[in-house]
Length: 287
Length: 263
Image (cartoon, rainbow over all chains, first blue to last red; front, side, top):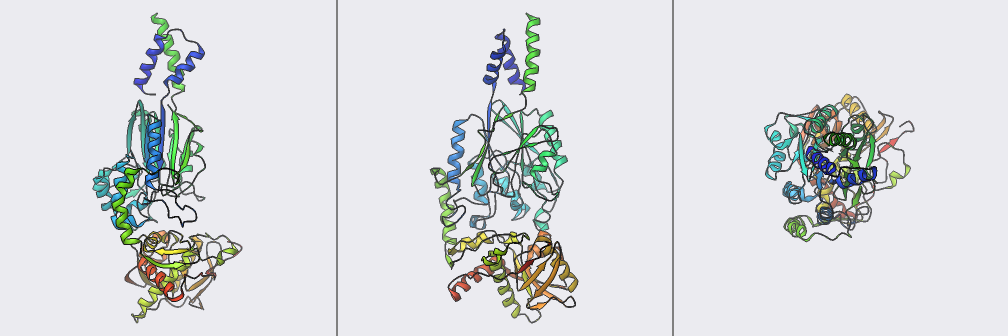
């Protein structure tokens, strides 16, 4: 609840003077703003549906179909935010031929409002990544890398605040430990940090100082590991003040978004939408 | 009036303070399938067309054909007797890398490739029965990683075999390894039992050689030769050659890893 909305609401109620319980409930409904978060992850250059010969995903996916779905929700709801959790690059010949331009151009065209960094986004080196994200003004959020690379500093923000109607949406991101995943030269000037502490700090900033109504984390850590390696489920349990963690990396398909009890006993939603544009995640909130 | 208004204010302050957490609506939240029943957006189709045409021009060439599904399955050390019956794409690709590495080494008198290893993440899709296009091989092996040859001494080989065991196996050619929990138990390389007193030439990709995917045993070899041949080139050649020679891509039904019960 932001200040403006609160004042607006109080004056309406004061004007209404006498209030009974049922009227109170009615005014609550009247006041609710709806927010729909749409999200993808691990697009992996999959512009077209899988070929019909593919036994698992034949004819599924494709950005033309994805766009239709996104537009449907944009028509249906007033407040829609479109987000992505990294690894937009690598996986089809489009990436080998065009070196990542059409992926970021597509994200700009369809108006992705924030994304984070996946390990494959480093595949053509950090300088190439920076050059293209700068060119296409890709809104990239990330709070757990220590950055000593000028180009990377220019393209990364620790968080982004999106004003959607009267709702203030705070968005940050956490990215993976790349040491086993990437050759050293592709991440020179960047130091990975365990995400829990920097994330909690950023979330507190968004909640307390920036008074966001809702806080969303874009994660490329992965949904779940049996080992003690950090994943989205552990991240949700060890933090607080986060409404949803939208994941990636493990290409996980979930029947429904999961509700996980956080450090303060409240619930954080954890979700991931498969990969390759095969699914569009949709989270619906009343604020 | 003033008093009354402020008391209402206070009541409502507390009421809405309690409601300030966003309410998640379970029923209308979901992961929605992007299915073929959805009408394609014509503007996106139009935008994509020049990219699509260009990719098709370069990548739609049929280079091979398979009657078997070549599945991308990672066994992660699980005991599954049926696995050896499948034409696992990891085995096919490891063989093609091995053939290329061997033929490269045959022109270099100092080397003789004993075995070839790769990482599961290096081969990324399944190929289903039917034509194999150039574009599919790019999806299978999208990275511009090259084949490197490294010479390891017995001690380094021992660590490498243990790292393979800890991974629960990897794409491998010209070797058979029995794995226990977290360590190797028995290894046959090029038809002979592993001999820790000698050096071995291992072909791999440069990503793994630099310690990628945790294969640190490859990082400081006795000798190292970069072939300049991309893994993908080896696969393209392998797929076309095997189809030309045999009319198919043949299943590799032999076990390359034997997982013991205590795995």
